[in-house]
Image 1 (spheres, helix red, strand yellow):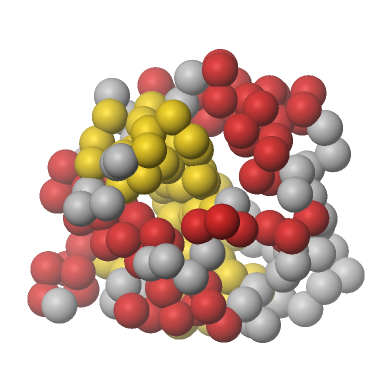
Image 2 (spheres, helix red, strand yellow):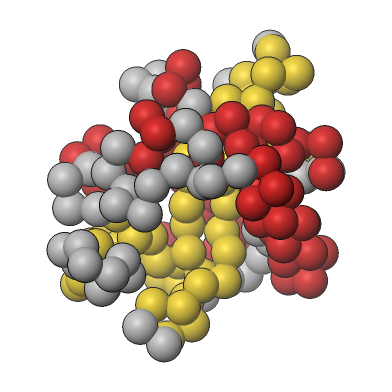
Length: 176
């Protein structure tokens, strides 16, 4: 399945995405604000990819690869909505990781707007959560611009300061 926005092409993940997944998630630059650091190996990326594909098949939503519509062969990121636990509470988490070449071009904002519309209208999800590191101001701006509201913090990484938690309900999204 492939979906599009004004400038982006979002595609269902396939096993062939493993090299691109590792290229992006294994890049230390894409983990500047993540104390957990980059993914350790291609094998790790393959395991994550397999789990993400299964997750999408099970729930009907999940992660996509992202490319420019006019350059669909070059993946510039991965993003989606996926089940996650925050301090033992199940949530649906909005997340994205983009290659440095895509930074500062509005990709995250365009994806978030699409993902929220898709979540609340197509999938009829009731609430979306996002977690961001406090010093990641660019990502915080993206979430706030997409109408997510900072609601608290979560201790999601051992020996690191808490991350910020943002939320948006379907009802809040409908009113915006």
